[in-house]
Image (cartoon, rainbow, N blue to C red; front, top):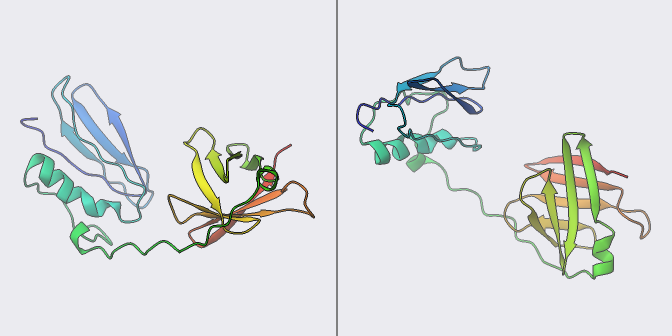
Length: 186
């Protein structure tokens, strides 16, 4: 990677466009019009990093310094906090797991939609549910009550609204302090 002059764009996300001899990173944020361009040799690999974290840019400088050696980047970004100075993530809420029967779990199995582009499929396995958004990997959810479930991999929680023992008609996702209701698709 000799002669590689990396650049960084920032915003709500980053896209990568490749020209013949140039790698350009273009942020999707309307708050930033910055782009970063670095020349690359044909056939050479160039490192890239994209994150969904609210402060993911905090790891960029240490990561790139480790890969490329000391870099000179414009790290005086608005609200930038170096990775080493970030507060520790809060502990996940502790849940008390309960066991539901296969018949109880079957009430929740189905497809729930927020829009035609966002469909969550709920399946049951042994004593747990799995929720899959579109073509994403399945996420495991364990029961906390006869209608409340929690993710084993994140702070996400879900509540199913049922009517007197019938199949659930609404799934409510509890994500980052927001409640998002999805209706069962027929």
